[in-house]
Image (cartoon, rainbow, N blue to C red; front, side):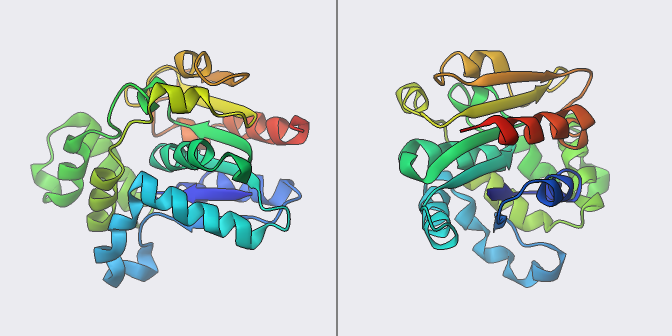
Length: 224
């Protein structure tokens, strides 16, 4: 499995999946963690197309078969989707969390979130931006690096490229998520994709939800 990590979200979901799935897990980190703050200027590697190429190389290096299960949440899901579309032979399965129809109908996380990560905390008034700022601080993420990554990954995947994805795909979005867009609508575009609505969860709370974790594990157990 290759998981694309942003905001250190796998502190909440990834460890449980890692320990229960019989795969080698390789992490593509899209921002400097707390031990890498001095490297925040390199965060532009969060650009979706560039990281799709980087991810393809990493899949080839870490998997004897040259392909892997791709798992990402939010910005990480966008990058995994680009990788699955641009390098289909690398994607054995695709798990998109916190990203629905806004993959093809939207430009990624709003600029207000990047501004909220850069501004003094007391000056952040946008409610969604404040949510992301608090979450990033709780996970000890590099705020400046994340802001750069958000701007670098604000790209849509053309609808025809999303339709070209052939890997088994799971799309999971909280029913109160105002950022991701509909999971059902995206599933209607990607052939054979499964959609999961996570009841009562917004963009921040869905990532650690027990239903989401269970769905990921079941999906991986059943995929070809």
